[in-house]
Length: 183
Image (tube, rainbow, N blue to C red; front, side):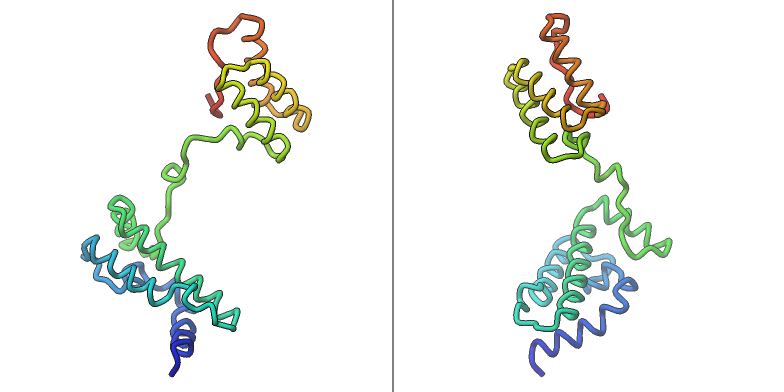
């Protein structure tokens, strides 16, 4: 049996029940495995299943299934190699959850000012305005905030930033405007 035939058989066997495998089963490690063992197991599975190794696979459905399996293996490694996530995952397994559920507060970093605008043109002028602010060019910031508002005239964040810069230009404010959302 060729390597591609063997892979196809494996994919067709595992993919239908992919959601029934725990991360430990996907990596073929014991739940008490040390971090180094998990790393070794992941690299073994990556060498065996990485989609790039099977560029010659002509069947698009089998390739898509392989990508899904490999993504789950990578997810398993990411979770099990992080002590906090692993502890949370292990607690979830006790409750019947076989996948890690990441809490939004774990994922969320500080908000980006660009998240406050929708259009690409607006983002361009917002970036220019923020760069001008950073370099102390309040007039340039003012101009670019106005350009950004031309694309999104009802945007509260842009209005707030423009007002703050206008206050500074008048000499009423000594602090630059806040550029983080929600502050």
